[in-house]
Length: 180
Image 1 (cartoon, one colour):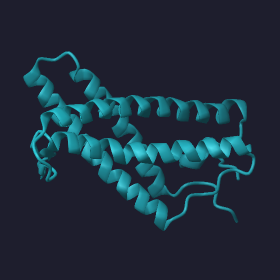
Image 2 (spheres, one colour):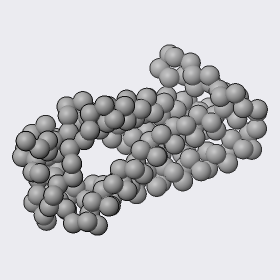
Image 3 (cartoon, helix red, strand yellow):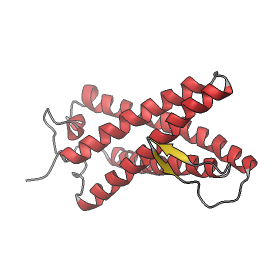
Image 4 (cartoon, helix red, strand yellow):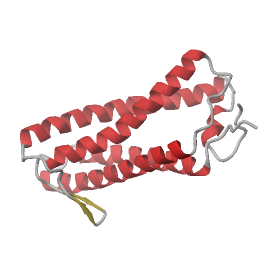
C-alpha cells in the first residue's frame, strides 16, 4: 500500500515551524516603530524564536532523511510536481538560511543570542557592525521572500482543496482522506 500521508512527527514539525515562522514575522513587524531599547527587547524574542526555528528545521530534515515523505500524488501535472519540489526546497533554504544569517549578523556586532535562557555565543567572526547591518538587510529581504513563499504555498493548498478537490491537503493533516 502506498503511503499517502506524512508521519505524525513530520506533521507536528511542519505545523510547529509554520506557526513559529508566522509568530516570528509578527514579532519583527511589531518592533518596527518602537524606541530603540524596547525594539531591542522585542527583537531578542525574534532572535530566540529564530534559533528555535533553526533547531526544529534541522530536526525536520533529519526526520525527512530517516523517513521518506509520501510520494507526490499521481494526479499532479508535471509542472505542479516541479513547483511543489521547488517551493519545498526554497522553504528549507530559507528556514536554515534566515536563522543562520541572523546569527551571523548578530555575531558581527559581537553579541550572543539568548535562546530562552540558553546562551548561543556569537560566531567567531571579527566585529564589523557595517557588515552585520548589511546581513540584517539581506535577512529582511529573505523574510519578505519567505512571506511570498508562504502565500504561494497556501494558494496551492487552497487550489488543490477547492478547485481540484484532490485531497492533497490531508497529506499534512491527521484527518481527512489523503489520496495517492
